[in-house]
Length: 393
Image 1 (tube, helix red, strand yellow):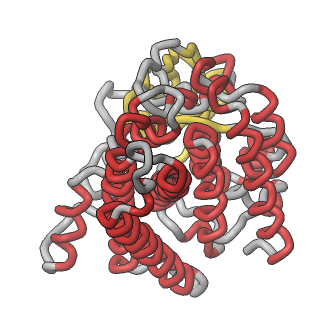
Image 2 (tube, one colour; image 1 turned 30 degrees about the vertical axis):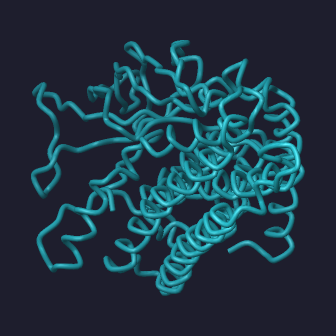
């Protein structure tokens, strides 16, 4: 658990780096990735290592601080916030691998991690020079932040000596998160999305790369460090990161609409946009929506943290609420940003308008599989006491 001083330092750093990112927002979009100036600021601030264990030089901050930090960054630039949270959640593997591997891979102050947990690779068990490991081939989509990363994670199916996928005791295929050095990975320059343009979320490939087994983990089998932060499921943290970005973008859209509404006059001699009753009503409803879904998220986080402090994992009901709160927040924030964009009228359609950027960014992040509509089915089944697959809960 981080100290109050370190937590305030993270939030202060997020505000400062957010301001820097806002000043480079156009550059971030045109480059398609984070400029080195911002990457170095994130390194020096410790934001990249928010979720890395304290013994490895990380902040090991509480989950609510992680969410607030990402939210602050997203209010200024969604791509910067997105790449930061992806680095943080990928770095959680530092609490799952062996202490020796964790020290070797994650100790450096400037370490940056990216990756994809989806099992788009095949890892064949081998022993080379007396070292147990895997020969890995694969191609992964959505490699956010990979251009700036030192380590890149790829989800894999493990293939045994018989050429068949290895199975866990429950009969499911064993999935392994494998950690590659960047020089083992080929980055593909194919991120051409209409939002989150600066995340560099293109594909990456690995061809016949050898990775020692100790530089990998099975999230469904291996047990992490027994401290509160690492009792939170990795997929739950991933969802919270997405929701945090959406909350930041929605807040920014509200602030921008208020600025526009107080200055935009519909016609000579007429009232400003802010003086129209329909705008007043829409802004009030939007504020209520954002504050409500945000409150749900932090309620779920605080309840789960109290459970995590007991050291025996987080109860199913609390994991359910974390996932439900994150998906509901994203959906709500999409509605709010769309409303603010619509209220902005003709001014909002131009590339110079911040509202159109917020609209693009929030709609791209909402497509992430961790916050799609299947979450409601998953959590609804738990509310109804039905059988459910909780692997990604």
